[in-house]
Length: 297
Image (cartoon, rainbow, N blue to C red; front, side):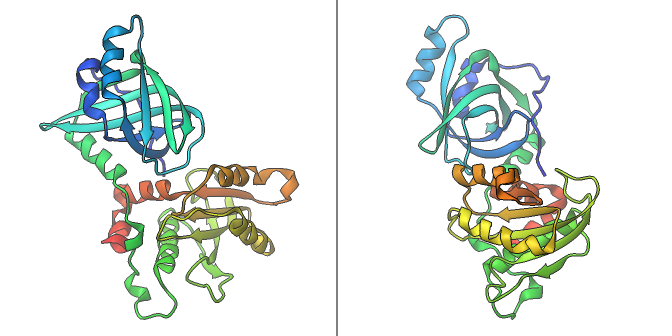
């Protein structure tokens, strides 16, 4: 579900000569575990870039900003990765370590020159990168043929069907729709009795409850919404509560969700979140391309 970053052994190129070609380009953001957490767009003051490179002695630092983030991020140490096409030559940018702070919805920090690496790469690598960085137009999600003509099945219902199809591809078994009421196409719960199906946590049989949250407009996901849903699924006695969503995750929500394991909440199961960026990464995998075509054309 996540793809990892590895610094290549290809002979590096001169950073001063090629770095400005990555300004304004899409860049992938990895955490300290080398897990992809999101993407944004690289920005830098061009004048400061040139002055800094040619006037600073020793190991100069470049001020870097990542804007247009597709996921909420915390102040942390990250790795950055991008590939550009210059006249049919493909160049890869890797920044191995950089401390970035979240400021006004942007990540900002300074990268040491010796932590920046640019090298030649292949067309296959470039096309792979492009596939993984193309955003999905979630407003245009399509209803599968099997839902055609059925009442109360809208885009949110299609999103639920997509999530179920992903789980089936991961090997989920005994899927059963539960807890459906008047809003059955919006925030339905699903029961999953799986055996080692999700590639991030478990290696034994367990019970999962899946909650899907969809929005055309990328609205913020509220703590109150999910807390109410979690209390409803207690009766099903799951081992895990899995939340899949294309909605915006705020830092406050993420802090609260990660803290659900604390004893003060008395939640007797583990809670897992798969966000919009992670779902898009799953759909970009070659083995999932049929699902992307099924729901987005």
